[in-house]
Image (cartoon, rainbow, N blue to C red; front, side, top):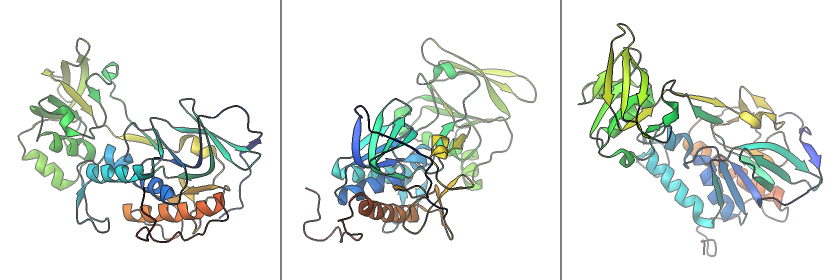
Length: 345
């Protein structure tokens, strides 16, 4: 670990803030949601921010139908189900959940507290911060044609397949997300067509085999050339990459699964020691900046293993150590949740 950074600006608290809490959690993926629960268990007031509009992070956005096998005590569970359970658990102690908000500029106040401005203009003041941002801010690669139909038939995530029940769906892409979405939607949609600009798919071999054996129409090497509709998507034109031949498809919903761009964004300017786009932490999950902790896939330390189960443990470690920093009278070990008097009211 490097010496603590003093790069954040120190100023007097001025003006009102939108939320004043003990702990600000940046990221509503599995580690962040579990941290929200555990911080409530430690009697800390909590706010959680995430740039995505749905909780669950990558688990819900990219892998909703993936079966998770390596979480202790749960033999198997779908990604979206695990995300939903973690979100329900996170709400046990009524944290403030701010979805669709990205953490931006960090300011250190002269009383030691931290203030974060979001991209939406909110000001959040906290005695400590826990960064559980996974791979950072990840945004979908836009579909070159038809961006004007975002929210009107064009989507990049499918957290709930029932939202497309009975629809004529076109899935564009050739990676794991595209193939997983297609296989998931085949069960509920009126029809599913998969369009990929290459002949070969990049998804897991078994999933691609399942796709090829399905009833879905597979169009390769095709790409979307235009999108039409009166208010909502109605027709999508796709063009053969090799021959130039085009075909018009009647479409209700267009799922663009073209991959994502991930970056730390404003977090990179918070003064934390970074290692290959990850945040360096010590055994307490503390970063090089006082009062800022990190947990989950975004962290780096010797022997780091990227598993959901590891991230959940790191979240508990981070919260307990943050609790002592926030209130030195607290004990590091809080006791077990099964102890009398520890249950939520």
